[in-house]
Length: 157
Image: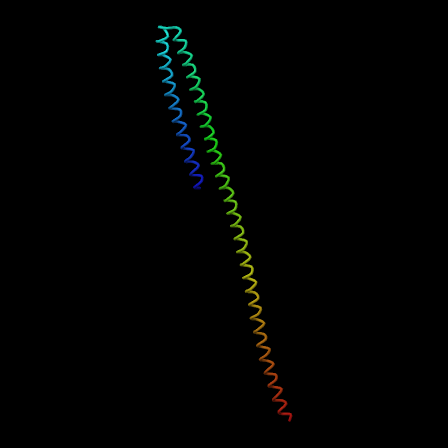
């Protein structure tokens, strides 16, 4: 969950950067427009100088466009990385949930086995107690019979 929160924060940060880049691009476009207007005003004075300025301005515009494309690509890459990170976190969370369920199932199985062993132990203890009781009863009867035999034997002498 912490990783998911971190990934979300990173995604928010990337979106803010993207918005900042967009604002910067708009400002640059406005500046370009101003420069172009200035170039047109100067161009009336000197055609040769205007052509040179136009060429310079075109080069600047092309450079700005290249920079915009580069920034856009970087922003898209960061977005994709953030999305991939979120997906990885979600995948890890699903794996951890599955492992937790496996552990819970294993715990339930072990508890069931322990209950079965406890039941069998109780059965054995009950059998042992009954056998001991029978043994004690038979031993008492044997002693009684032995005493009876001794009495009869004494009478016969």
